[in-house]
Image 1 (cartoon, rainbow, N blue to C red):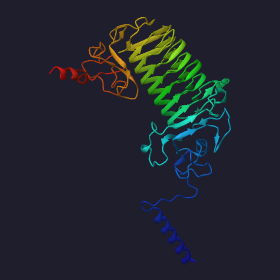
Image 2: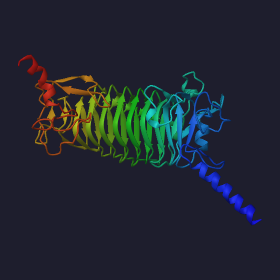
Image 3: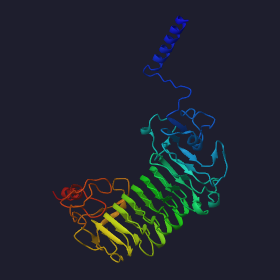
Image 4: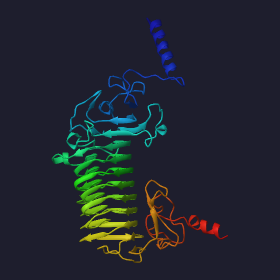
Amino acid sequence: MRRFLSSLGLSLLTILAFTLLPGTHWQFANASPSIYYVSPGGSDSNTGISWASAFKTLQKALSQAQIGQQIWVAAGTYYPDEIDSANTDDRFATFSLKNGVDVYGGFTGLESSLEQRAPQVNLTILSGDLQQDDDPENKAYHVVNAFGTLSSAVLDGFSITAGAANGSSNNSLGGGIFILNGNPTLHYLMINQNEANYGGGVYCENSSPNLTEITISENKAYTAGGGMYTYNGSSPKLERVTFSGNSAVYGGGMENDLNSNFTLVNSTFSGNSASDSGGALYIYASSPTLTNITLAENNAPAGSGIYNLEGGITLKNALIAGACVNQDGSVTASHTLVQDSGSACDLQNDENGNIIGEDPLLSLLQDNGGYTLTHLPQFLSPVIDSGNLEGCPATDQRGVVRPSGIGCDIGAVEVVIYRLYLPLLLKNP
């Protein structure tokens, strides 16, 4: 008996040693995978633990994933009401983010590391168009739901489209992403062509999500916040975000209500419109801080750039190519350019380096480097080196180091002096 136990122990040690050899992969039957895989060619009867055995639906992976796990999703279009090869046409269906679970899109289905994916090429679409007929009455109320989530709930590398929050109560809020009492981490998303009563693209209430490298475009709100609506103590952090072509009655790009003290950095609002007020931004009783931002080509009867009602706005190195209307609120600005001299606003040229109503001699809105579109100051622009160094951000909207000359350039872009003058030097040596 003793000899048998000794032999058994030796066999177990041999097996254990073999499993620990370099290059040897061993998975115990009850061990949880670190990654679940999803592909249009998969099946929900698979295990989901490799590309070869991928699930077909994201819903299946979300139902399986636990804290500490990731979900990798291959390019294709996914619907929140999918159950393997069928759709249920359930407008209440939604992709619900989970704490501790990272969901990544942008794969071909062959990758072995996150660095190999390319979301901008391998489009991974989460669509609320349940019957693929573009009828708002047949679309999901919320494509993505982030109720009660922590920052450990991550969504990265997706296009979110065709949500229609045209119902009642919460189902009238956030067609693309609905965030309530949550702080999810959102990165590299395209949120486009969603609609809602409030927050066509994103609705955020009592929440502090992080949004980085996001494009919010062509969303519509029947009332307020075409691109995004924040409410009731929300403090989202937005960096390198583009709001373009969104529309609403109030706050075509974004509306912020009741102590929504968000921060916005290195971002651009362009081509947004409001039929009443706040083409780019509508602020009510909130105190946002905006640094290195560009507001251009937005439209509204009142405040094509910003409409501020009882809010306290802080602007740092902002370019506002449009009107700013300030009603019973306050605006603190430094190194800021407002092109519209007819703005009903208390901003003026002062020792903080603001330029109001003067032609800044800017180039067209275009890609000048960085993640967002910007206006590059032309030769002899009055914004160049016109701001004092105190309070100058370390970089401009594109990430270029400030200052480049003897002073801080006013507005969102810092001109690199040698690049500006080099053509002249080459022309006139």
